[in-house]
Length: 72
Image (cartoon, rainbow, N blue to C red; front, side):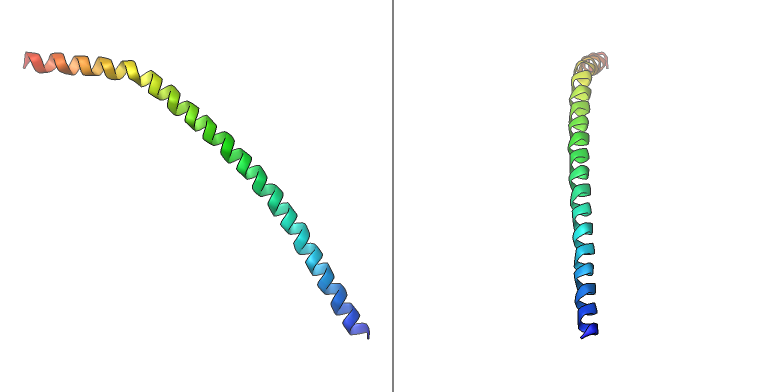
């Protein structure tokens, strides 16, 4: 009768360890998801800033290319 009780206790402890690890993984996944969301927002903001900054430069480059073609 001792061995079945030990087996049941070890099985319960194994499930408890798996439960604790599952909770830890869940918490870390949520933290990672928040970091990915934050980074995505920063990348989107940087892309918008770059697009705004490149607009006038693209217009100037187009004007310069147009004047170069006329002289050739």
